[in-house]
Amino acid sequence: MNNNNETTSIIALGGLGEVGKNMYVVTHNNEIIIIDAGVMFPEDDLLGIDYVIQDVSYLKQNEDKIKGLVITHGHEDHIGGISFLLNTVNIPRIYASKIAADLIVKKLIDRNVNYNNIEIVTEDSVLKTKYFTIEFVGTTHSIPGSFAIAIHTPNGTIFETGDFKFDLTPIGPMANIHKMAELGSKGVTLLLSDSTNALSEGFSKSESSVDEALNDIISRHYGRVIIATFASNIFRIKHIVETCRKNNRKIIIFGRSMETSIELAVNNGLIQDKSIFIDNNQAKSLKKKEICILCTGTQGEPLAALSRIANGQHKQITLMTDDLVVFSSSPIPGNAASINRVINKLYLKGVKVYTNKTFNDVHTSGHAKEEELKWMLRIIKPKYFMPMHGEYRMLKQHGEIAEACDVPKENIFICKNGDVINLNKGIVSRGDTVKSGDIYVDGSRIGDIGSQVIKDRKLMSNDGILVTILNINTLTRRLLIKPNVTTRGFIMVNENPELINKIERKITDIVNKYLTTSTYNYTDLKNQIILELYPYINELTGRRPIILPVIMELNKA
Image 1 (cartoon, rainbow, N blue to C red):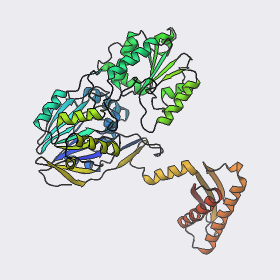
Image 2 (image 1 turned 60 degrees about the horizontal axis):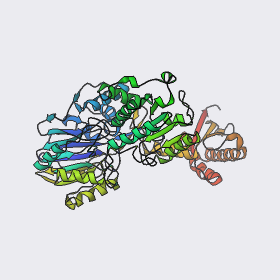
Image 3 (image 1 turned 45 degrees about the vertical axis):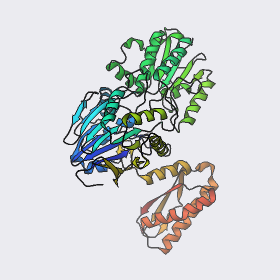
Image 4 (image 1 turned 120 degrees about the vertical axis):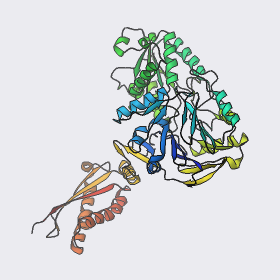
């Protein structure tokens, strides 16, 4: 990294080459500002892992320089890592909107993290340190209190969009395009812009079009309506509530995260009348056309409310043939198979299902598509551009969009996590790199699980584990009884006696040979068993279970 005290640097510790665990660091001399601290949910191959967070070694090494953590909005991929960050690094103050702050406080309470230095900011707030002046610009997203961040530094202005879209008829407030244009006219040196939908052509649909579509569905259907949506999409929840009120339907809530979001919306005045919410017992006195069930489970999560309803495992809800289920969402990449399983189970129950494919206006993204990304580039008019928050193909496409909007190709930086971008007197260039990467959270353990543990879990999930118990007299150097073999996830011992006998005889040969030709060593014997048994089992079965020898030592002449 450039050690010149007059250079301003920006580092991505998360959010590049991935969609999730966003964290960007701006440094100048002895000051550091952090933007966002999100988590990423693990892919299917990260067995047993609960969350993926950033490697914050750089922040720990420069802890005394940190002036604060600035939050763009309250979604998991922007705030979900805060509790883990606070357990590792001293953060003097967190700056967030009221909604984001409420969500952060709840997360900290859930994880027993004691922290009281959260400052509520609005679009009118201005934060000043020795080297930085930070402004907040209101944006349109699927959650209230979303900001873009303008950071004025000694070497130029950095504009970080956060997650945004341009919606001219939003459910919530309009993006402050005038303030963006004012900043653009004054001069923005480097723009960092959300790339999530860079591969999607055109403009995103307005949230009001979803409002109209859901109103049409709810008003026409004669039975119960079950709506599954993202609990984090608070504006969607708000207009579902308003639509149900217009159509004289009461709402039953299922899903802990959904309950949290509605509580938050009520506390912040986004939902005015709590009487629309009822429990399952109150619903028994209502007609079917007077009931709406609002639940989680849009991505086919096995433990979410909608999956349990579809499986017939929900204790309070049984599907009826005249129910209508609406997926007010789009599939997150990788979740299509899980979602389709739930949809098939719903059809088997005889209910009608609407998805965003079958009824085109029941969901819209909170992220800007290609034409809106062009708007941002034209409004901000940056000298340099760095796409952020997206997979590499999205970043690359966003770079091409910027080039089409007259940003010179040499002024576009497609980066990866850990890359350093330097600003010096209005000139932007690549710097060195800092340590970055993924840290796995497994239960209460952070960073204890490495790639080898994940590899072992994959092996066990595919080929199982084989345990052999050996009783050895270390003085007479004899195997006292034949080895005992047991397995999990490899074969059923009782159903494969011939194979088990072969494996036991092979282990006996390995141990006897070792005891007669080598000086006895506990570790060496275990390694020899694993070394010879692996290829033998693979030849017999075509599988390679994890082999775990357990040696019981007896010292009697």
